[in-house]
Amino acid sequence: MNLYPLLMAPAFRYGKATPWGGHMLRDVFMKDAPDNTGESLEVSTLEGLESMVANGAHAGKSLTRMVELWGDQLTGPIQGGFPLVLKLLDAQEPSSVHVHPDDDYARAHGGARGKNEGLVILNAEPGAKMVYGLETDGESLKSILDSDAVGEHLRWVNVQPGDVYYIPAGMVHALGSEIQCYELQDACDITYRLYDWDRTDKDGKPRERHPEQALAVTDPDLALFKNEGTTVLRKGGSVTYYISNTHFEFCRLNLSGKMPLPSGRMLLLTPLGECALHWGEEQMTLAPFSTVIVPAALEGAVIEGNTKVLMSSLPDRDALREELGYRAENVAGLMD
Image 1 (cartoon, rainbow, N blue to C red):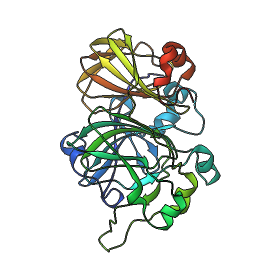
Image 2: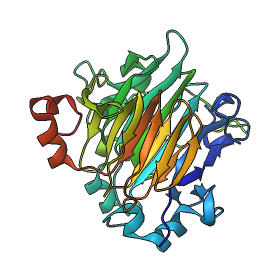
Image 3: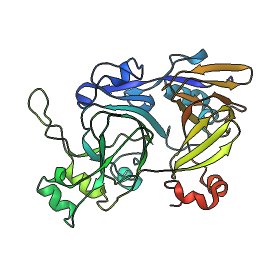
Image 4: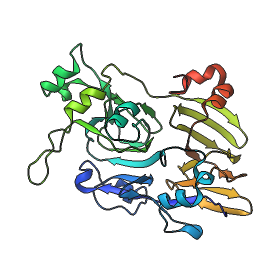
């Protein structure tokens, strides 16, 4: 089996599906996206939104097909289908205020898994903000939903490029306007919308809201802060770890030379500047904001450059806790 890193071509969510989207994914992040695109699904096996291989012998095949062909050689041991989705988002207007279910609720209502997320702010205009939880002021969530007063109880935080936020299932959240970000999430497309800024479609109809489901899954007292992470030195630079829950791990590679990549786990790499990926006698140049999947069974891969690379994978929490020691408490989800 001739394994090699898979450069991915994204699928797009746009138009009425993302009325808050814009043109930045096309004009700045160099994606072949339509107008009014909110989401570039860089790595996805979601039905109707599958990313495709863009390089090598398997160019033109879907990621789902590659999982069928390479199996555990690509993903490592998994259960229940491809586990992750990686997106780039462009919010020119505020996205809907929404929440996602945990595994138990999702499975009890026909889903395969719940949805946790990690966000990295890639670009934000001065003064940009996002919704990161609720300010209930002692009121019950039911009374807030019944009175249609969600907009008055949002917890806003200022954001700037480089900020990292962990969004576990049950946390109400939304992007404010003029923000672009990287989003890692469980492979789940279940979203319960609480509020949508009174937007309507061309026929004057508002988008559907889901107050009953939102009431069932929301933790109204969940209030977190941006994640500072913890950094360890590595050959070729350093690594800053931010999130390691039971579903996924997210870190940033701070490259200043050649950095060997771990093997045995599938890696999703998104560089913020140009760099090179080497394996065996082969190499490829990675453009900024492209995404490549390094198969779990591909050994000896090395990434080289003088830039930062966002890296997502399935977790190895025991190994990371042992490596970080007391600093493990600075990694979201790692001590849960």
